[in-house]
Image (cartoon, rainbow, N blue to C red; front, side):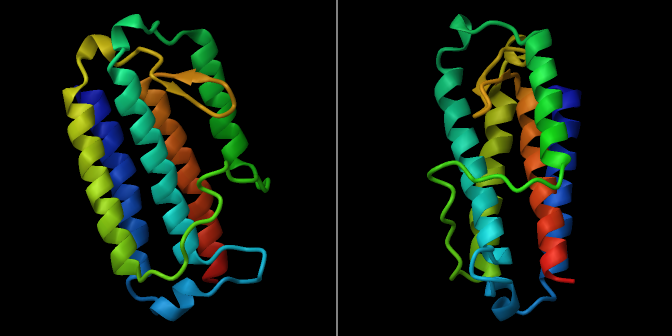
Length: 173
């Protein structure tokens, strides 16, 4: 794995670990309690993040099989990536895509962490196997329609994580 990708992934992983560490001191009952009937609990938000990353990871694993047929991500990918990051940084409520819109809320934090740890290990192994020539290929198609390279895909996942991290912090105030 190239240094740039490794550093990007390490930062992404470090942010997750810091959040999860901060949640260790919170009672599971509080993490499972939704602030209102139409809002998710912290556990539901964490499960949503895990499901979103599973979906992204599964898509990448599928697309890497046909990487030779993919074009290199260009200016439109960069522009789309910037739009996605800005959009996710805004305090707008967005409906979750079908399939990740009903996260489980009755698990304990340790169960969610175990799933997420395994997933992130799989991500690391997958990223380690991508050839340098394929890092700039437009592997991931974001729901907004933008095709992103692997760096931009991790940026998207990171922006999505940060959006929900703010949501978690607001719930636990």
